[in-house]
Length: 194
Image 1 (spheres, rainbow, N blue to C red):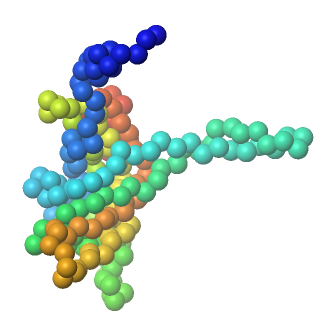
Image 2: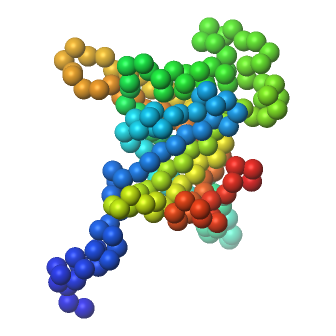
Image 3: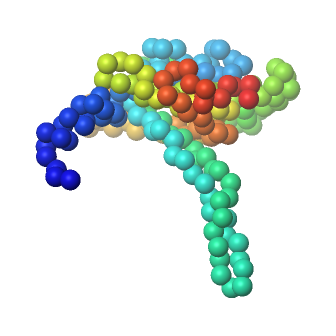
C-alpha cells in the first residue's frame, strides 16, 4: 500500500482530527460529605491528570525447571493529578480536611468520629472521580471513573521570589478500581453501588 499525505490527512479527518490531550474535564465527588466535593469552578483548576493504565500482573508457574506466565490479578496504580492553586487554597484545604477526617489532626489528636467509617453509616472517606475525554466539537468521547478514591499524598507547594508563575501542586490518589465507557452513558461504566 502506497503512503500518501492526503491518505493520512483523510484518515485523521475521519477520526475527528485525533484526540487532544488538552480537551478533558475532571469531576471529583466525596461520597458522604458534599462540603468536600469540588465545585465546577474548582474542577477547572485541574491542570493535568492521566487516563489510567490497564495492568494485569503476570503469574509465574514453575513446571520442570521452566517458568510459564499465566494471567494474574488486575492491578490499579495510584493516580496523580496536578492542580493550580487559587488564592483561597479552596481545593487544597478540602483535600487536607479529607485527609484529616481519615486520620485525625496533624498532632495526633482524634475524636470518636474521625477515621470511623461506622460513624456516618459507611466508608465516608472515599469518593469518586471522573475523567472525560472531550472531542474537538465539545462532546464526550470517552469516560473513565475511579471508584472508592481517597487522597494518599498532598505534595508541597514551592514558594520562590524568582518566580511569577501560578502555584501548583500534585495530589496522589488511591482507588479500588476504574471503569470506562464511550460517551457519558455507557453500559461499561459501573455504578458506585457495584
